[in-house]
Each structure stands twice: as structure tokens, then as C-alpha cells.
Length: 168
Image 1 (cartoon, rainbow, N blue to C red):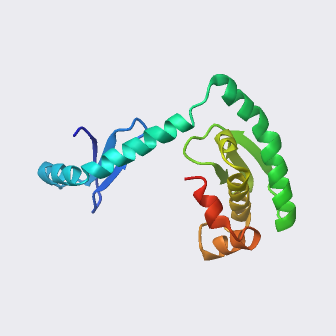
Image 2 (cartoon, rainbow, N blue to C red):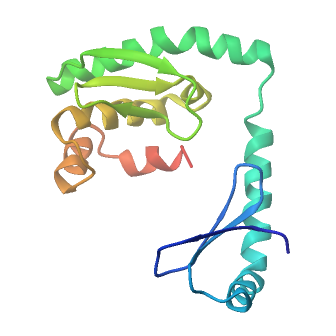
């Protein structure tokens, strides 16, 4: 089976599927090629399953240029309204809201409390979007993903775990 290999100063071997649907192996510098080959062969079914899942996800979320433009145009007003709604409830105030084209994250909160959302979030149900909004607002108070952070999210969205699953 074809795969990309990255050798690095690390203790464990890691397997993932790259954006171009190619298996990616990260291995310790001194691990033998034979051991890497065995590892890949052992996980061949998992690799095939993950590639299939990623392809199905890509098909489900592929958009025409027109559909993408519509989502982009709706993102700022909708996400601003949801952010203002939850910010008021939570007693928080972000310093700004910006829309990006991020592919790997739905949102982020800067050290200066400015929130960015990917327009791609607009492809998800409102319950999932509200989870991301509350998640990013919680970062204004907690700059990590510790217990207090999730306790805060749960205070405003008791079903946040179910909402989070909608994003997977």
C-alpha cells in the first residue's frame, strides 16, 4: 500500500489520512522500514475505512461556486447575530468577529478576544453552529480546553456534547 512517510524525533508511530486521501505515517527516526511496513499492513482495513469515510464527507460537503458564495454572504450577519446573542447571555464581549475560509477549524479566539469563524460552518445545523459560538466565547475567559472551560460551555449548552457530535 502506498503511503507518505515522515520520520521525526518522536517515540511513537502515528497513522492518519492526508487531505489528498493518502495514508500518512509519522515514525521515529530509528524505526526500521520493515517495522513501518508491518504497521501499515496491520492497519490496512482501518486505512481503507478512513479513506472511504473522508471521500463520502468530501462529496457531501462539495459545493458549487454559487452555493459557496451564498454561504459566504450569509456567514457574517448570521454568526454575528448568534455571537451577540450568546455574548449577552454569557456576559462577555468579543473585540471583533471575522469570517475566514479556514478548512481545518470552525472557529478561533485570539489572545485579544477577537473571534474568527470559517464560512464553512454555515453548512452545519444551527445547534452545531451555536456550540461553536459558545465554545469560542468561552475562550475569552478560559484560553485552554480545561475542565472549567467545558463547565462553562455546559452551563449555557447542557447538551453541548450532542451538538459537538453534529460537527464530526
